Length: 133
Image 1 (cartoon, rainbow, N blue to C red):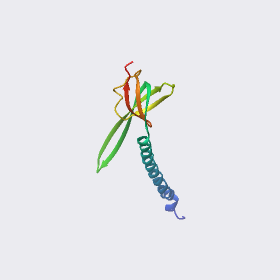
Image 2: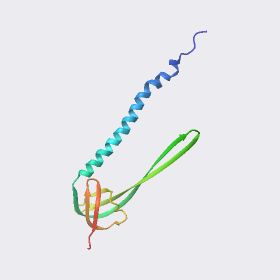
Image 3: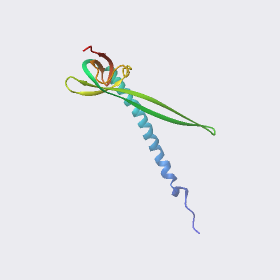
Image 4: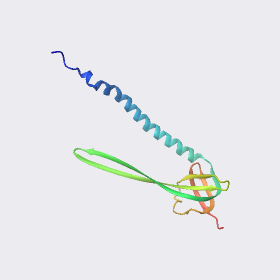
């Protein structure tokens, strides 16, 4: 009878060799996502505020859910959270339509078809003043 299979033949070597790569990849994706979010925020906050005459042509909500599961000893705790993002689409007098993230809680104050002066800052809508006529 010959010697049995060694520990290295069981596939554990592959798992131990690939784990550092996968750990680094997940870590890099998380850090990259955080950096991307910060850069996007900084770009929008530093953009000049532009006021243009426009029509509100659409509104939409994007609800994002996040679930997390924590295991404390033998009792499992699950939690979830959600965040709603509000978007307003404007059509400008030159025919261009663009969707803006509502960062100033304007979503409930405007309706589709409203015409007026919209103040935008990068990808954000920061003000809307309805015109009388």
